[in-house]
Image (cartoon, rainbow, N blue to C red; front, side, top):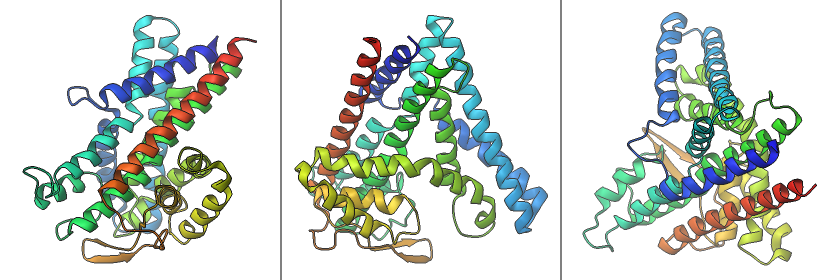
Length: 335
């Protein structure tokens, strides 16, 4: 029964995320995590100054406090869900908050709708909306560069914001079949979101963050490693003839491996090859220019249709993952 109830909660959360996304009227756990990270960072920097080892230790403490705290909160909600309908509703809401399928789709679609070929569109609005989801400097980007950035964000964030938390939810459901006292889907999903938030806020190789963000960035890389590879293996199933799967995975590994991140380059590379679009290249971050590996170099550059194809592929792949999860749940229920 625990497997079936946990699976039902995950499936309901995915449906709720697809239906309403992240409503502005509801406090989001990631926002609370971000505020806590900011306060802990100020405290650690005040005590550590510019000493690398002290900053590394402080970063490790921030990571432990946030990840264990988020996981513990999720575990408490799971225990409450076993005792009351209110707890079950909170469990579904909490799980939905860890998924970003609707918000990612809407954010990317908002960029496309602001481009000049749309009614009342302009580059200024498109750049502003792009700045909400990317870390690069967007002020001087022209339309082709905006489209490439949108395509890259849609592909990378699909793994970080959707498939990785969904993977850890499924692992949590399995764990709680072994013992109800083990961390379940919400505990693992919120722990992952904590590590992801740490990486997005502190995982930069500049200034004090070079040491302060090390623990969070490495933990995020570790927790995303397997979900990223599963996306690489399964995305061709919803985009190309199945016989092309080995070639697409090899091409994505070849193109994505040179990226400094063990996951981001591969996430973008498999989407590039499956969606038929060239990604990667030179990006500006503040005063620095960074040359990222060119992915699928022989394919056309990003346009509106390519960005939409990436969004469609993400929706199809989520449906495939959920369908397989549902089939396993039904098989378990029949035993």
